[in-house]
Amino acid sequence: MSLNRSEKEAVISEVTSLAAKAQTLVMAEYRGITVANMDKLRVTARSNGVSLSVLKNTLARRAVAGSSFEVAADQMTGPLIYGFSEDAVAAAKVVAEFAKTNDKLVIRAGVYGGKVLDVEGVKQLASIPSKEVLLAQLCGLLMSPISRTAVVLGALAAKKGEGAAAPAEEAAAA
Image 1 (cartoon, one colour):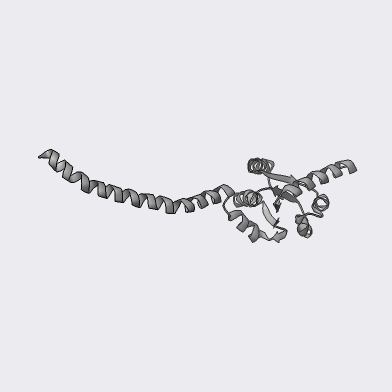
Image 2 (tube, rainbow, N blue to C red):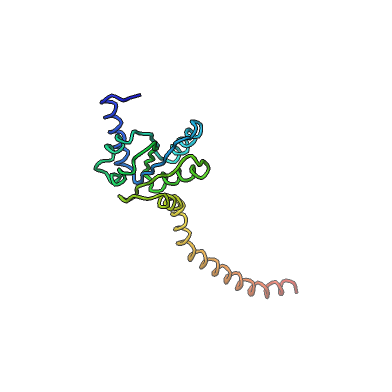
């Protein structure tokens, strides 16, 4: 079904606002995917904060014009699903995970930091742990010296405590 001019303008403005907030764009070819599988992908994407859209490529090109995603305008051909995410790795992670289990979804390209990513670049971006995991790893690294010091001091205190308690126990036993 063809869109009239006002509907096209509404789609362009909506995608432009998504692109303005997003850090990452992932484009994948969805030819041959069943509706049920596409619904699963959309549910997974929504729960991870990724906005998935099937757009006409000319509308997508107009929507990203002037943004950091404009560098991928030449990649926008064929039946594509566009994934925008505010989290740097969320869109790549959702699409790459789904592509592992469904061979009909073919990752075409992505954009991060104003640079076009090829298929391997998108997969590498998807392999980066999430922000929460990275923060937990950083906290673990910062806590490690402190906890090791506490363990060593606790062991020293226990060892000194054992030596002092032994004579007192001998006196009580006698």
